[in-house]
Image 1: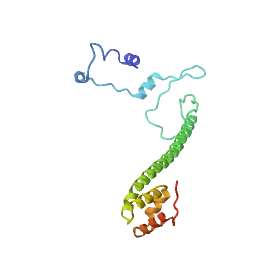
Image 2: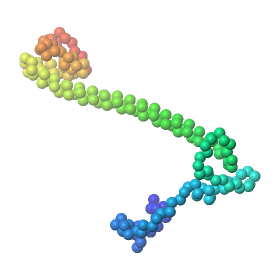
Image 3: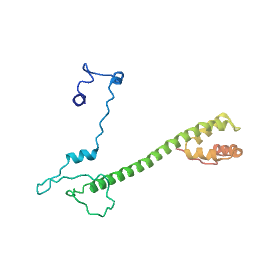
Image 4: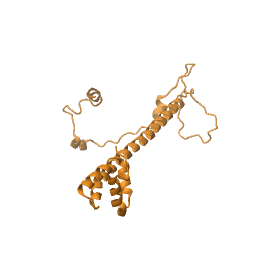
Length: 183
């Protein structure tokens, strides 16, 4: 973009006339002339019609009081392309909105699955600590831990058993009286 900026700003940034922000305070405060857009339009705009005769057109300074009053000095009617653009923009807006809604749903599902895996991993880490609170031999704790953490349903079942029944439940699992899912 250097060439286009150089064309726009000239050599103000690199030559002897270059100024930095500190030097800008020395700029004289001449009043800035404001341009009225209506005057500018009235001075420059002269439409041509099909018969080739230019007609002057002035923008009214105040709006008409009655919208049903016939207009005078009205130029040729412009083509109505804006409605098509608006319809295209609306359909694009709807398509993007639908895409965003579907993406949001998909991202929420992914986040829930990732969160579920994290929660399951945290539960699995605590199983052995829970087994230590029971009256079990060390080898029985290892075997019970391996059975319980082998499937997510087993972990949920283990944490669903009330504390006062966990001892009996684990003993029944180790004795083979309760069959748990294995992966």
